[in-house]
Length: 264
Image (spheres, rainbow, N blue to C red):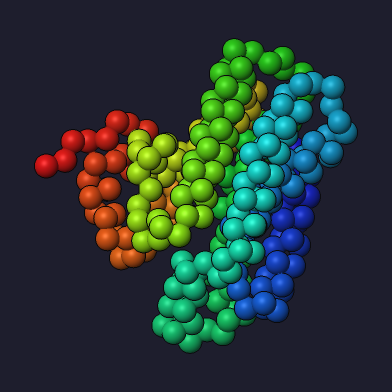
């Protein structure tokens, strides 16, 4: 187990350094969001390969769920980045760090973005790594429940992303707030879908002792999305650029889907 995790850590470090060098060339770090999901696919596949293609279904199930989630999301985020360019959130972060600390773009991108995100990615992906280690435990009810929850999360996030993309493609919606479809019940269906997916993968992993120890992964992801880099960071910007966003906040659940609250 230790050697597999070490190889995965080394692989992730090499990839992160390569992406950082690429960011210096294009002067943009916002493509890191697309790698966040793809990096987890790489770690899951790397674990599966190092195990020597075990006959047990759990590694295959975990790798498959991670790949379905990660490939769709990474392609979605990559095409969005290619279409729209620099993400304003990252532009604000980089600008603030470079101004306040006097760092160069190279130093700020390495320390504030790439080397910061790498360990977070690695920890969040622990269920897809540790959950594959024990190949003699048969799949049970918890794995079935986890698979259902993960697939619901993937579907929820995919539908939410598609609804937002369609909404933004209409020029008449510029500056408006999407409050229909899944966005009527939660302000962040994509983040909720992420959490469902990784809690589901954790449940599949948790039928084994090593998989059970990967609990920090979904806990960290939930914290990041609800309290740190997800909802709070995104909504600070939206509150300034969307005139109706305050009313949307007042009637719509922040994270967990729930019927809209009545407004005066």
